[in-house]
Image (tube, rainbow, N blue to C red; front, side, top):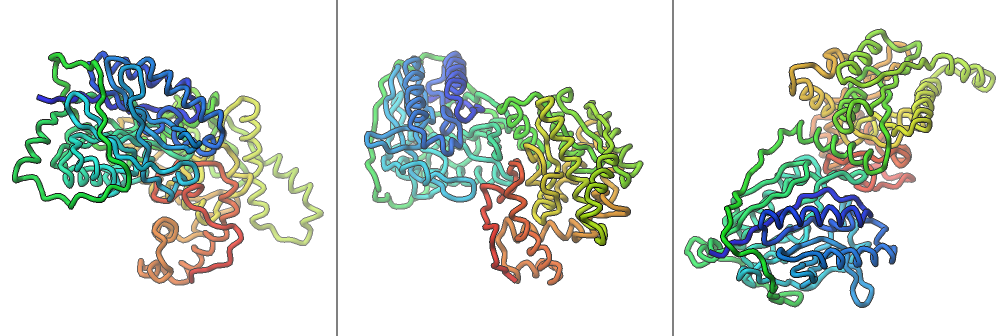
Length: 578
């Protein structure tokens, strides 16, 4: 039997930490070797971290990364390794690459062919496209390697490599998470395996990097397109399993094998590379594949938010976080996420009441803090607010109170939070959700002031769904029941409700998704059942709030199109779609 034992190292690298990432790679290599794996596989750009962005323009960074992969290769023996790194060509070209290492040397390097340049991806800005389709022979088994986007194209590298005899294809990834994307990935990889009669091992990175979260959930599909292994989601894991290449050979000779698409004309060199190695071929216990369960939708999103928050705090060296607790649902969710992400002792709540703050809000803020086991401090903003009003009285003479006075309160709160951040080294977590950020229902230098916007990409209706799920996952209620039931309000004036300024969130969120994420026309948005004037008002609010969003902190992407690098609209913009 021709068996290949794979060790898929689903690791959490840090961008720019060449030394730390190398240590993580070597540690996993050691474990994989102990488990008698033939090949240990690491994610896309595992050595540099993904995405390295403009670090790629620094020649010293590229040189240090190349030196690091060479140093790693000198320590690889008795096992082969596939490691994502940044390669530099003889003419200075830069490539998103995978090094195939065996017996203390780099046997070959694969260059990513399809470079994504949409959404959060800017790979055309940094890398040259590869043109080679190598197939490696190891233990008499033909193995193809490609990178991330390469597997999404039907007639791409996997197709060419399979038709050149590859029986197993290894695809390494740094594929960011978004809602519903894991199922989309699985469908793509399953189809590529079935179309080409080839086993595919899909390895993904895990961890948070600024706005992005990589969810892991590496997968292996057999030559019929059936899932045979799936790693955990949002956790580091070394998944070891054996693949029987003889099954692929028998299948291709059988009548069950579908008539594949005619062999394409290669748009690059196709080369078979034999890798000489002293890999373990002695009899060994079988490594049985495991299919880990898929998380429920609310838990999946919550785990993404927890991991993104944890890594942002940890990788940037903060000592803890501080959150303005209002007694509302948004700050309650952010506090729950933070407590799970970095531990309750590192989460500090600040309750900042005014004359408009209700007794119920105080009770709910303190109740939440008690349920989570986090600290809470109270600072009234009224004395400062009165000083502000006195200072501005002459300038405001003859003017009726309006949003100016409301925003002053929010900005006082922002200043208090930032003062604690400066004094104690705590990161301020803002609590605005995607619905509010979309329409500008937020105050610059007020509730938008902070370092990380945890739920910036979470619509208000989804905030409620996640909070309801949180309260079902254990015996104890975490989010006070009243927080889930009471009408949302900023409490910046008497009797204020969010619906004074906005449509109900059940109506608002579908409009926002249609306009921001789906790019539907105004006519198509009206077909969703929206009132014409309401839809015009919402779209106008979204367009006019771009200047605010540009000044907001980064936040975790969980939808198909998040604000920030994922959606880039001009601030000065007179186009209207209605």
